[in-house]
Image (cartoon, rainbow, N blue to C red; front, side, top):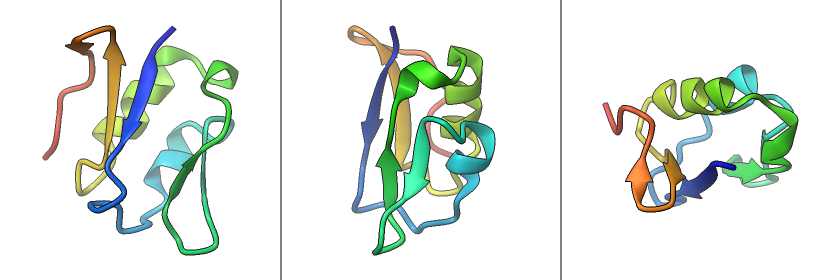
Length: 72
């Protein structure tokens, strides 16, 4: 299973992550990304969510290997 890593300092609350993977991501009361249950969305949707983050606050990993394309 993929591991989701979040950089809350970068997060600007665009909501793109919850659009691409609505079961896995939401925004908290401060408008920052909140990881719900990554198992509810296909891995490809998690990658789209990470790649769709306009500030690169989300990364998807398998062990020590990053599987998304990285920050814009």
